[in-house]
Length: 150
Image (cartoon, rainbow, N blue to C red):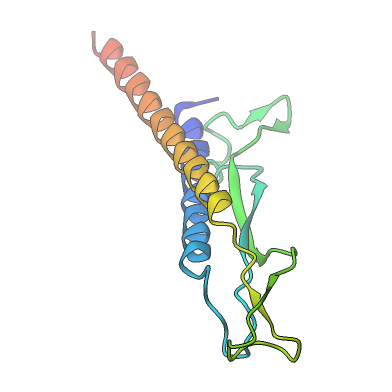
């Protein structure tokens, strides 16, 4: 694996984790939200998938060392979409609420603040780890260039 491929993989991880944090932030911001139709906000989840070839390697025509005996190496991660969580919303008894149904129950969001904050910390640490990996690859490349000057 070359320096640029390592940086590209880490950069794709940073992009995916940034998207994860954006979705988590949206969930936290809407934990008590109700839509115009009276339905509670449903938690959103970012879908991640492996990426076969880093975007930087494609224009280089494989010159960056992406092939090993005719097989492509892994290339990081990409966000394929954002979907609603399938878990059901909670119902609480509050007959005075204008959104209450005939039985007096109100639908409230399925967002769990503690889980979301835990996911936010995890995404933040993954982002930092990828940033550190990029910094390390840059330092190794700089050291290799300095050795080449001598």
